[in-house]
Image 1 (tube, rainbow over the protein chains, first blue to last red):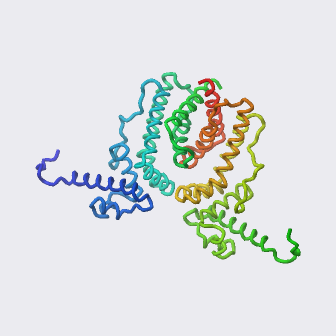
Image 2 (image 1 turned 90 degrees about the horizontal axis):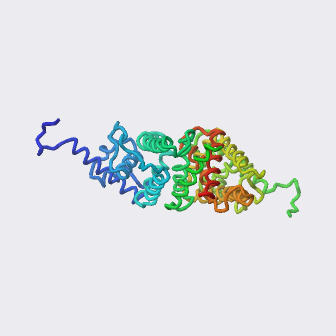
Image 3 (image 1 turned 135 degrees about the horizontal axis):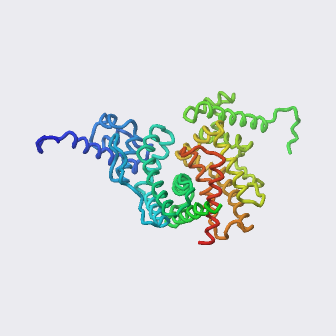
Length: 212
Length: 212
């Protein structure tokens, strides 16, 4: 541990303070001016840091926004090379249907939150254009999330709530992919009732598979 | 009807020839250089027309590409103000499950076709950035397609293959939304077996709804 006296400037703490100021500025600005209006200059000015500080830590404004969203959504942005949180899990009360409705309703609330809708949409578009950003998203968000979702479904399978041969990848894609497509392409307003209907229909379909 | 002699130049036919040359050039170039490399200049040069001819008929390169894709996919691009083809319909053999598998397998084949994958992906991205292009796509492609899908499901409902209270909008989103999301976000390779699995799971889920 460092023996640095408490009153001396601590470079690690200063770095962390700058990092959070940059991510907070990026998140706020994305909501205010949209992705196309977002710039490294603007983020630097709002955060009170130099542009070079941002370029040293992130390869693109998309990468800054990705970390900003992770900080806002999870209360914690990834450190470089940090492992995904191993203790994160979806709720498991022993009732898969109820737990999935809880989770999908929370996703609906998040996607309907005006603070998140703009930045998340901007990021979704930018990822389609930027394979490196998409890979970073996959690594830090999508894969850990998919593992959590699959783990919850696997637990239901062990408990006999889903057939042994159910395709859990398909289950994830039907449950969350449908919700995400409805949001991204604005098929219909996202409501808790829509989340429930997706869960009921997909679970019934997966359970019927055993009888097919 | 025009009494114009057959040997005189016909402006309407000349316009149609130019229009097809432009759309063919746009489709070929999108496959060769991608959306970001596509330009009105490049399309004009390949088609042998002036840039102004293109700007007179289309508001953006995205709009040209949209019509180019419609020409390539359907063998017919929309005329301005043309009504969607009223006689277009999904197959209806009286077996919803078989018909949906036929349709989703055809969609899989189309999305896997290297001639279409690049331009379709480019268009998907551009629509998320360009609300006018998205509206044009919705008007000329998505809404007519959704009507055809809903009509086929409604026919199955009348035939007793689906419950009377099934949410046909949800059915469309689960069937095609899942396939589209899997393609757009590259969740997994699209195969005929995946198309079949989606159809089986979603239909079983919708039919179980009557017993819930």
